[in-house]
Length: 489
Ligand SMILES: [Fe+2]
Ligand SMILES: [Fe+2]
Image (cartoon, rainbow, N blue to C red):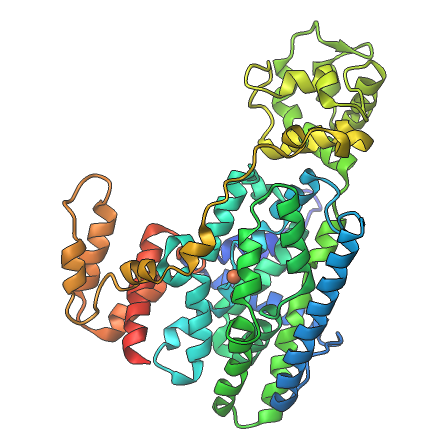
């Protein structure tokens, strides 16, 4: 017998604290296990106690909140005006040094943006409660009222796809903390209503960084629509910023002690500090480190793919790639041997020629994002003097998205697919069944087959979860739900 002591019946998981990344993905599963619920509750409690002592400018009375909102917006407007004046006077971009820097940011905030609005999901099953109307309205708007072109998560997914940044799931743990807290709030709303309301209040205020980000993304030839949409939809007069304050007032009667309620709202506001801030994420970008990371990520396959005639610095490429920590030295060696001519037009570098372009021998090995990082790294100090097309790619198509957003006709077309009681519109819309719409038709038949209002709404709410609302059926469920809500309030 060895002296090793094994504790039978005490699984390690019971003691281990889950990472934010594992909590994030567990909370997106369709069935939440008891362990996921327990661990996410513990995670939420930890974050609340860690942010409790943080300072916030948000006042703890309703009357002061109104003034705060006006002052906050004036301040942000003033700071943005100063930023624009500085840029006009020739100051460089404040956030993004290069297009790859901006793409790094898009990818790094993906875990948060892809659960946009999720913290309000737990309210949806309380759709009959008139004290929650403002919050439910905000959640529906985050979901684009079920219109694909307006659903914030759909928009962000498209943005990632267009910019070849879809590999966000490989990101480090630290990028998932903010998204995990949003999903945890969605799961534990029944015990954290004031905190959810407070989190929403903090999140929906227009920040300066949103305005600057949109401005600089556009300058770097990246569609800024997702960000400009939020500068308009989160506005102080009629948008989510306003709705978030109304929500604080509307839900107050639920609680016996108003000052205790407001204190919990403020605790929720502070949860916005959890994880990395926008500015922290922007500062995380280290071009050299990112090039090393990208090459390392290819090393596993790459070490077997090169001919042994590829010799750089006295070693074969296969040899260099065998050891992960050698990759940084490999880069230096490529510079020394002229494979890479830093601070010149990348077209002059043989390394760039083998990886970029349709006919390049290594075509497809690096994603669009990875190629942009390598391009910007090679160009270095000569980056800004390269031709726009080479440096920033083809212009993104100026799709008339703003026009679509305000197109009432489109809203009507999709917003009222089905009148809840008569079902007439759906019958008109019903097309011939084919192999591509089986799920849609089965879904709609099922919806029509339920006559109990509560059972029907529960079914629709299921489909409107953060994991599903952006799918075709999720969008459909959202439209039915919205249609019913419109008939109630
Ligand atoms: Fe949003
Ligand atoms: Fe919003």
